[in-house]
View 1: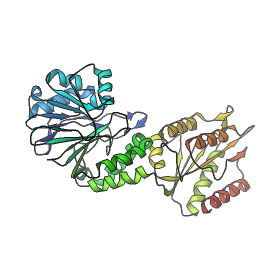
View 2: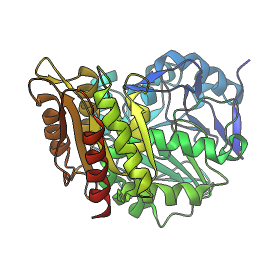
View 3: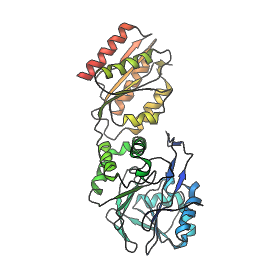
Length: 394
């Protein structure tokens, strides 16, 4: 039997655990995910979010352990995306009198487009809903990470139902940060932020400001574990990530055909290390782009290398740069240095295309394009090493 989990008196986690999810919107989820929903038992029983449609039966079974679903009077839909709302039709079929609370106008219009006309209750920032001894307050968090996003705060419980913010794609039989361990949860939260939320960092800053006056001692996100022991830490960490202030850290990303670009990558890596800048090397044949983006979130230096193939860059490098562009924060990568490099035979189109892509993302190409014809030699590698060291020290 599937059990509900009481997270606070009369507040229950009733979501679904997706142990086998391995790819979500293009990034690897090697620890699976959860689709969190929360049942609040009050004078007017309220369900906060649903889950992916495939997990509707799990959700309903957990709800039934607490209450007959027909008694649910409100369903708060913090987000339209189907991993949050997919079970809405199944729940509404069992709770025909429930009103669906969604942000105005995009939440209501998005749910209508997906599931048709229902008894919607549109809300905006500052609106409240009394469900008994509790009052739920709504704050629209536009573009964190869709136009319809909002969060819900329960005053009596001091719980922030935070939707996608503060989430992690992480499946566990445990439900709280202190049960799993902070390093693991923070690592998963960082990967989630880098691969889902990062483009909207300025919107995150505004959302954090809007929520700063709330008295919160528990954050219940839509994915992953619930924050109860490290609330202040994850809020501070989100503030740091959303500021986009880089750390003095470098990543060197490349693919290579005959090892010349690889040799250049290793020289660039060693140059950073000699300058005292921590650095990581990523061969695109061995590393998934979503893991690389997790490190790019806070890296001051992003070096990307490709040889020339068929008059352009390697497809693996092009795919990484396409992904990087899609996740680039609005307003660019201020304070970040891009370093395009690579080898070539007849023409330097490969590294030049890398340079154009990095510049298009908003990186500062202070060192220019570091290209080398034909195979590596000790003299060129030594020059490359010194060029990078001089650029880092400048």
